[in-house]
Image (cartoon, rainbow over all chains, first blue to last red; front, side, top):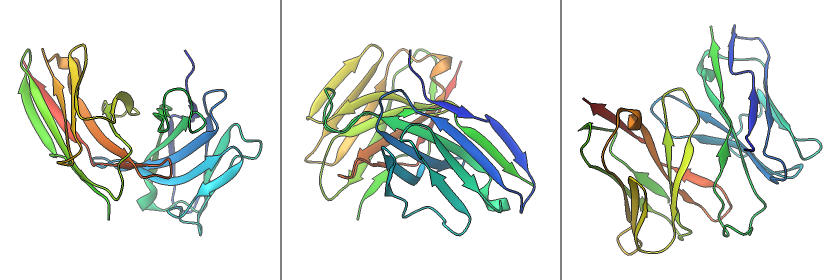
Length: 119
Length: 109
């Protein structure tokens, strides 16, 4: 069964250091999402890609966060420098091209996430 | 604006039935999703309702009333493994999901 891959699963870093997370979506999924989730809250969208293009990064703190999906397949999310408040679960999700067989609004398939702890 | 409300936490007994409610306010309506999320894991898809009524999938059923802006997830024959958070989400028209904060369900023996 196809799955969304993420690495690393866990990352501990000190504040002011740089961290990077990687995501490989399900093959053929055009849309890719990066979320941040704090314990007890729902996922918060950071950035949405359609193929290699950014569709929405309005909630991405661009002074320290960056995301890319250069070839429209896998994606990297970077934080530099990390701050204590960045400690959270970072989730990647992918979805088929909009308007596919399953309907106009497709479910999102999530990877296992990266648990980031900033000390 | 768009808003989703769910109870923060619920407790139920193994073998019983529990109903988790979700109310939403959106500018348009494009269906409603329910996801399950075990502690420390990623959300997994449970159901998607776009029409009014009840849809059943084994022990889990999901209900939607578009006129009332209301949905519920019904879990029957509760098992300990059903202890998890249940997230309600609605598409916003830009192929993004607006998420509720989730309901933490605690199952007691």
